[in-house]
Image 1 (cartoon, rainbow, N blue to C red):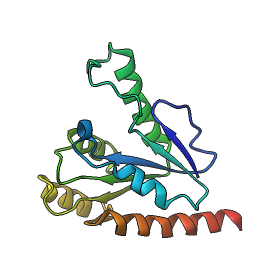
Image 2: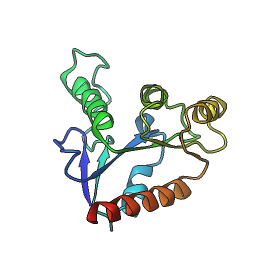
Image 3: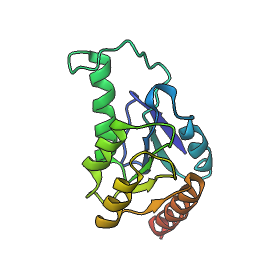
Image 4: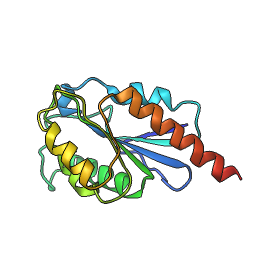
Length: 160
C-alpha cells in the first residue's frame, strides 16, 4: 500500500487508487481516514488522503491563497483520476465540501458512500444514491470491508 496526502505528487494509474472523501471539518470529525487506511495495508493500492498534516486554518479560502488553492486543486485532481471514491458523512459534521464533492462525482461510477444515522442531510444522500445507483452504507467498517472485497477482486483480475 502507498499513501499520498495532500499536497504530495501522485500517479493514480500506477496502482488501484482510492480517494478518501468525507468529513474533516477542521477536526470536528474523528480521523476516520487513519482507521480506513489501516484496513487497506495488505493490498497493493494507492490511498489518496486529503487530510494534510500541515493544514493551517489561517489560510484564506480563496483562489488567491496559494496554499488553499493547492489543496482544493489536489483534491479535485485526485478524485478525477482515482478508481474509487470512498465517501464518509460523519453525523458530527455538516460536511459542506463533501456534499459539493458528492454532487460533482455522483455520475462518475466511482462513489461508495457511507452516511450513518444522524447525519443532518441523510435523506438527500439516500435519494441521490438511489437515483444514481451509488452504493450506500450506514456503517463505515461494513463499507470498507465491501470495498476491500471489490479491491481484492480487481487485483486478482489484474494478475490474470
